[in-house]
Image (cartoon, rainbow, N blue to C red; front, side, top):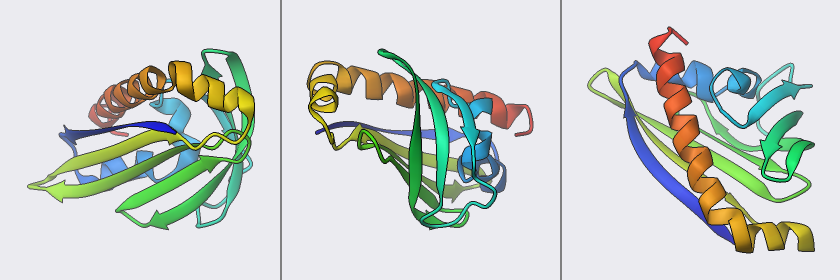
Length: 143
């Protein structure tokens, strides 16, 4: 199992950042690898949705589950097929938002274990960097 954890300061109010991070329907607007999210009419714990993701192995559409959700604070989601997960935690800091993100995988199948062992760490690092850059840009646009 590998993962990448990163922190950043986003120069935007926590409400604006949460509007983007706390709603997976909005991930295609800023999360670089997310192409599409469908089937999530209401964001709540244990809700599932379909996400089309660009991966090193091509485009993949799988079911994600919201494992934990604390409004204006944190969200954790997991791919039900591969064990890929992301967890976002937000903290208000003097009118801006401190973001702590962890991206990783608890591999389910042999193919996922092979991906995790060979490309996992670098892929998760790239996902975190691109997502934080996208989040900064979307927050500047007014999210």
